[in-house]
Length: 367
Image 1 (tube, rainbow, N blue to C red):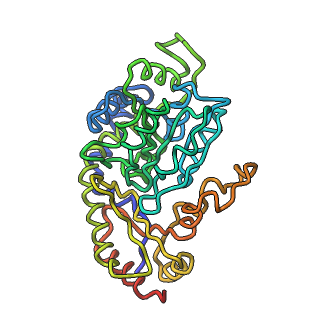
Image 2 (cartoon, rainbow, N blue to C red; image 1 turned 45 degrees about the vertical axis):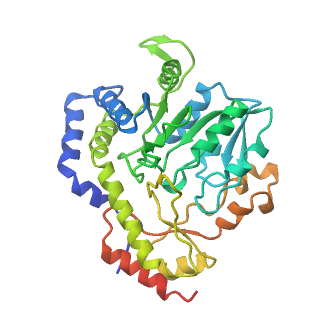
Image 3 (cartoon, helix red, strand yellow; image 1 turned 45 degrees about the horizontal axis):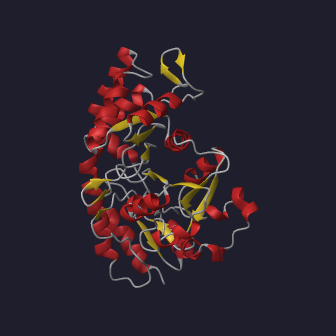
């Protein structure tokens, strides 16, 4: 039995008529850029999150970089980021002219280790970017307390956490700002690149909106040097359709996760995802840990089961940070986990038969 890691076509077919109608509507009205579909999605997503303001942009990486500029973070500044994430989280700090300062991660949640944050704060530190990695919320209450104590900005990276919650409150509404990616594989994914920024302050909202649109406060009135980072109408219309189904898909993701946990819960040689109290995991990915990760991955590939690694190299050990001379002992948890993590086939529509097949093959592996 062939089991793909992800099958986006199934999701499209389940809402094909809604998607096709939304796309045709944009095409028929030529509502391509800075259009009503974009404004509608911004309001709908803000309402979904319970957020004050949502500003759409071209992608999740732009969202982070624009946030940093909105807070005037640049040359000479430092920003704390977790040692394990997609490169965008630290990349944007460097491209803004600031220095990313890496903090090791928690072994259970994969999020930034709150006990290691304060030791990395200096007089140059201006912000913390916690990442809700794989869909599990970071410990925002503690992070906010630390940030307030040291007068730091908090920018939540929610690229993998659409719908995740802490004590009933959506992630993306805790920090001074938050960013989302709508890359096609995300829990709420467009049919191309798209992103959004969440803010609480109207002045910051106006500044960030201008930065993302050539520095325009209104058409042909440029109050600063900005950039071209805009969500197009077709992506916005698609996201508006999908947003109506996000909670339903979230429940399906939870069911898939529970099914995997039931099937694999008795195995002693793998570690399954865990949810901390008062958190709601978005389950963007289902990531297990095992000492024999590479051997298990090869074993499953030979049986036509596709798995992926998110991510095979922790951020401090990427070549672009070679100049810092980081050692594995500097980030012992991230160093260990990068060799153990394996993402199993996981999406809302995956069949119970496929889950059982994957699980049975894992059980058959000679640990």
